[in-house]
Amino acid sequence: MNSEKTSSVNSSRRKFLKKSSLSILGLSFIGAMPNFSQLSSILKNKSKVVLVKHSKVIKEEGEVNNLLLDEMLERALTTFSGDKTSALLWKKLFSQREIIGLKVNTLGLSSIEKSSGVNHYGAIINSILQSASKASLKNENFIVWDRSSDELRSAGLTVQKENGKTKIFGTTESYKSDTTGLFSDPINVGDKTTTITKILTETCSALINIPVLKDHQSAGFTGALKNHYGTISNPRDFHANNCTSPGIPEINALPEIRNKQKLIIADALMGVFNGGPRWNRSYMWPYGGILVGVDPVAVDTVMLGIINEKRKLEGMPIISDSTAKHIQLSAELGLGSSNLEDIELIKIEMD
Image 1: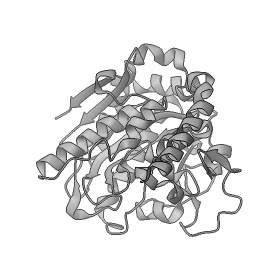
Image 2: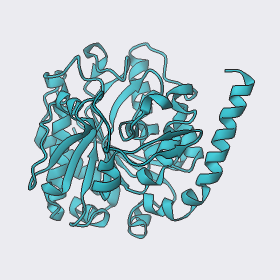
Image 3: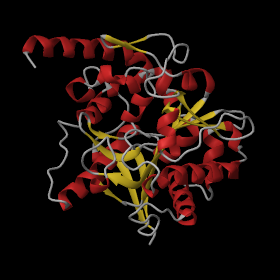
């Protein structure tokens, strides 16, 4: 990149930072941490991330032990909140009147579609719904969504829009479908513009981010932060400079996204340590974990560490911070903590 182009990029980022500063330091930040007064005792001065693992929750081919997964999620949620049951945390975060979006990441599954390798998608969703029901949150109040219905189907999910049930559908039918009327009005993101799915802006009042564990050829790593490239209409326009010119940090700073995201439950049951964002059997492994947090930067910092540990074991170079630069830049934008000293990581092995 030449110096003139670098200067332009840095100038755009400075303008975006200046424009965003009030929302980041003010009410929008509080909105990003829902019921903040109730959660402040949980978070204290650090970003808290709970990682729960069990070696028998998922087999190498992808079969999931649903009972173990339910126990893991209960342990993760109660450890995060400090409550005796997960129902208390659900009640702190969500009202019974809310429509809650479950944003999954079903990109790149064509090579393992219709195999047991996608079983973890349905399993984690079912565990979340089962846990939420303890707080009298009804299944019909949830919408499982991603950028397209075709991609949801590739994850073994059945698209359905009937009332009285959990709805499952994409913003569009397929990635190439007509998007007329499906996205918000244009929004400025640095020197670019984007639009956000109306599933989030108009239908859902709250959001649970459910990222998966995998590397990414452009961003280095895809987790909670990059999951919102499936929330906007034109993700390809935001892939320059490892998805940062502008890109992942600025997209996640948008109030339309930030203020509705109340919880992150990361699906680290199965992971991809190389060749992502495509799922390839040669580079998949059953990590057998889930993570819970509210700080997307902290969650991604921990998840990137998991992938790098696996890459070391496989004799591969780690994904550097300069490649996955969106994590640190997101921290600089005020979206969370990327410094491990500022992250309260609680690891639980349930074996």
